[in-house]
Length: 315
Ligand code: RRO
Image (cartoon, rainbow, N blue to C red; front, top):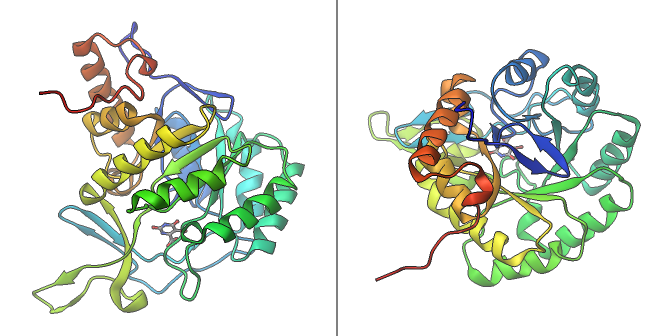
């Protein structure tokens, strides 16, 4: 990192040495994978979304790369929340915070997990996933505003830890306002925008078939095509939410320029999903150096210098 340029940020009242880290999902399911993130330049470690019990997830193949990104229908494979809660003790060896993603299969499950996490130290915050698109028969909570409110009432009643939410992408202006109205009634620490664009379909003309096995090939879309949607969601929630809520950008970030755009729209940190899956931990170092170079050229010494400062169209 260039000495006079800092990528440090603060999320959930915790210092991150670098504003770039992993999205929940790729390469963060096992201790080995979480340690690899700890050893990289990523500014935080975030776990795979955890359920009450260990889950195998959907049938394979359940992830595919495409020329523009990825499609997945993993179906929440994970080791169960106790495994990720126990990792907090090991994460303390790194000079960066550890966040846990939680995605219970029901409201009761979320309440049970989140109340039990009170017994663990070393978890800087909980990212409550309101947007898994891939469990057959389970709608995405974030698309049901009343259910989202009900969920937040229940989980905030049982936690003292900083809690943020991972949202699905919204596409209609009134929906941004409706979700912001819900979130602004709670002491939300951060909002991560966006999860994958749910239930896309990728067709292979050679085989005349789909790319992944679960759900007749339908799955969450990540990568290049989701960046404009991710930027729109970051911008909307940056504008609409209470000012003490940090926005974490996720979606289509594979270069320093992509990270720069997310921060301009209002992101205090950015997460890497598809590209981290494809490239592994070296992506963090590369994106850090690309972003640093952009900041150097523009004479920005820290991310506060341009965070949220997106300009309207100027003729
Ligand atoms: O495990 C998954 O299928 C998955 C989850 Br929980 C999520 O939140 N987003 C996604 O694209 N896949």
